[in-house]
Image (cartoon, rainbow, N blue to C red; front, side, top):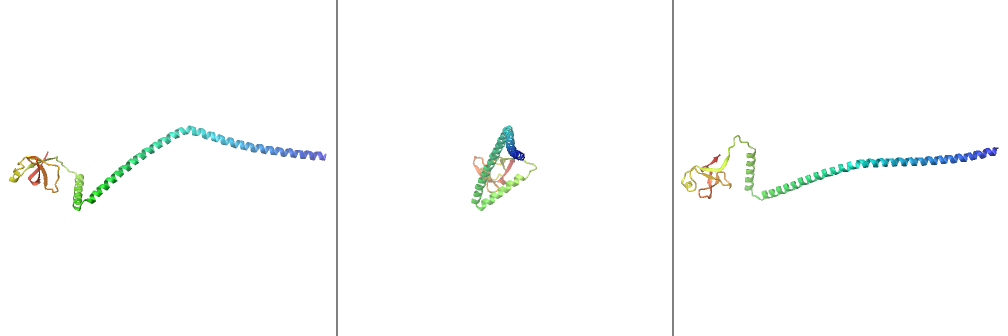
Length: 186
């Protein structure tokens, strides 16, 4: 009987060992299966999410790209305008360097005068015309200009403040003194 008990105990140990091995095999197989199932569910969830979101995302990206293209075009225009301005200023600078000192002083004077006149407000502004009235009746003036007659000023400016160009009775232009004429105001 002792042999039978040993045989049964050995037999039970073998079956127990087989059951343990089978249980471990199926447990490992179940863990692998559930791990893969979880991974597949996550991929399916991500796929569904990206399918629903991707249309809106693509539209958003397209809108962002269009905005960026507009910004790039605008900045490119500013850049081109800046290049034109720099080129213009460079050419003006070369022109100024080529002028002699007298011209530079004259340019500086007229710029300052223009700025001063631009920023100076006049309380009462009268409308000046380009007509001048003769107020001198001396003999040298009678040949070309008659007293109290009006004569048109040419847009040619002289270097002296007391001189101006007028069209005389014979429709020719003459350089005359301002003291011999007064400006007609309308």
